[in-house]
Structure formats: structure tokens, C-alpha cells
Image (cartoon, rainbow, N blue to C red; front, side, top):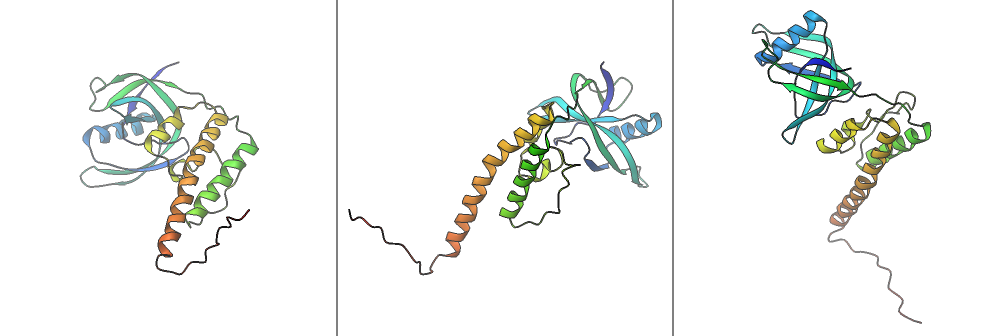
Length: 211
């Protein structure tokens, strides 16, 4: 069943379960936040990508952290579920902000422990290759969205990720990402080593052309 929800389009991807702090200063979005708080409604952050609005994430307002004298707000919201925009209204009648008729996408949690552990190991490998310490990752709470902003994906990669309905398929998508990124990082590290060796005497093994 489709629903009409207020929309706050941005050029970024928000994942389900992600907490997002937002500084709200435009009149249309201040009205949106006030209407959502008053009516106990959620709103959506659709991704504005390549001139189109098609997919986004429903957001829960967790807290209004601060309201300034001029009405501007700092809020914290949390991603709930992904939706597809069926119809876009800009603005909603009698409102300053946009809205849309949306279909919520099912979130199929069919990822295996083995898949999750493989992706976690790849995350450790990635962070180790760039000399960044990462805290221990709990496999029980881990999902394909947990580190999606922190593994070198661009907005196009992230946008494709939220459109995948199955956790099994999302984890496989992340594995493919790592197969592209890790070899590049290894080559970069090798280049750094060569630069640091510049001017140093090198021990070279002579080639044996005999026989």
C-alpha cells in the first residue's frame, strides 16, 4: 500500500538504522519538521541523483537538539526503511515543502553468518591497509549498511546498495566492491614504498639466464 510522506531531498544516501544530525535552516524544511513533530509523522530523505528522485529512506525524528532564536534547528533523525518514489509533489498543496507517494521496500534479512564474517574480515583488511584502527565488529548486530559510508564507496555505489532488497545480495555487492578497492590500495602502498626507497641502495637478485 502506498503512502504520501513529506520529503526532504538531499544529494546523499542515508541508510536504515543510520543516525543523521541535520542543521535545518530553510523555511520549507523548518515547516516540515514542525509538521512532523506535531503530527507524529516520519519524513523521507530521497536521494537527488543525476537530476532524478527515485529512492530514499524514511526518517524518524529522534530529537530536536537545539532551536535557535531565529527558528533554525539542530535535529537528530534515524533511518528506518527504504522507499521508492512513485509520485513526486513539489510542493505538497498548501505547504512549502515537497512530498511523495511512496512504496516501502521489504528488507529481507537473509544474509548468512558466513557472508557477514567474510565482509567483516574484508573491512578489517581495508582498514589495516590504510593504517586505521577499527574497533571490534559485532557480527550479531552487523549488517550490510553498518559500514557502508566508511569503505570507500561513492554516492553511486551507495545509491545502488539501498535499492537491493535482499541482505544476501547486499553482502555480495559489498564483496565485489572490496575486490575492486583492495588491489588499488595495495598498489598505492607499493608506490609509497617505492617513493620512500628513492635514492636508497637496493638489493637486487640477479637473473639467471643459464640453461
